[in-house]
Length: 200
Image (cartoon, rainbow, N blue to C red; front, side, top):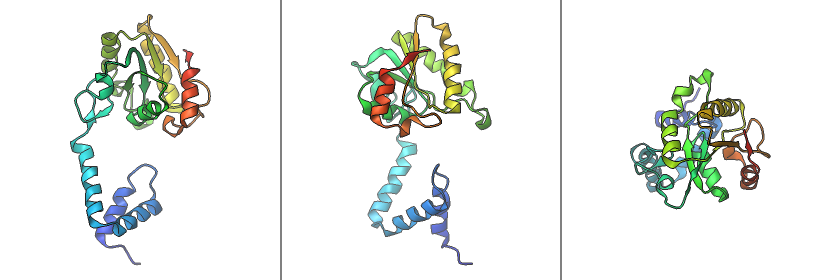
C-alpha cells in the first residue's frame, strides 16, 4: 500500500486534530497548501504561530486579545451595567456582528460537561464576581449555546447568580435551534433572540 511522504502525512494528521476536519478534508487542505506559493504557506505558518505567542485571554473578561485588557473592557462607551455571558470568544464576535448589544461580556471558556471533565471550577467564576461588583451590573444576559451542556450551564449560572438579588437575569429567547451553537446562528435570528430575551 502506498503512503504519502512523511511531511505530507504529518500535515494531514495534524489537520485532522482540528474539530470538524476529517481525513478527506485534511487531505484536500494539505494538497491545496502544496499548490500555494511558498511565501503564502510561510505567512500562514507564521500567522498560526502568532496565535500562541501574540494572543491571550483578557484579564477581565477572558475575550481573546493582544493586550492585557481587551478593547471592549477598555471602552468608555460600552454599557457597563449590562453583562452578556457566553461560552467562547467566537460567540462574542457573533453577537457583536448584530450591532444590537452595547454592553460588556464575560467568556466562560467552556460549558459544564462532566464527560469532558469541565466543572464549575473551570468557568472562572471568581473573575465574573469581580466584573459584576466593579461595574455595578444591573442585568446579566445568559447567552450559552442551546444544547445540553449550554442549558445545564445556564441553569447553574442562574442559581449561582441568585446571590445578586438586585441583578436581573435574562436569557436569549426565540429562534435559536435546540442543539445548535450561537456561532452558527444568522444575525437576524440572533438579533431577535436578544430583543425578546426573557427573565429567568
